[in-house]
Image: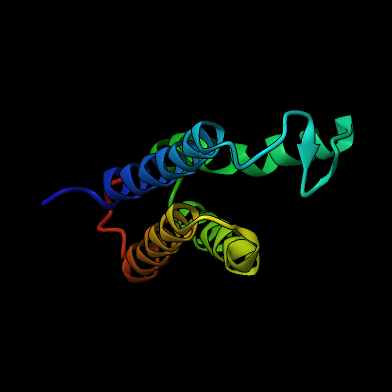
Length: 126
């Protein structure tokens, strides 16, 4: 049986790659203007906030493997719910069908992450 930590780490990697795929496709499709975010000129604060948000799955890969139980269980549930909510709110703002599809895939990954973390019962092996 695969340890829950590995499953969670894999789900975070899958989510991160889904986000990156959407960004790459957006560049090739021409659905963005360099230096802009949400139709406004990007500022350092906006790009910093985006970096922090997109860093969550990357940090969660490491935490899934290193943070002690039960802390990792609750950190995982909270982080996945925050990203689920963020993506759900943003879903209508994406113009392309590919973007909407990838956001839905990301929502599924977040849902699976919450489900695995919720049902996780540590068996004494950390």
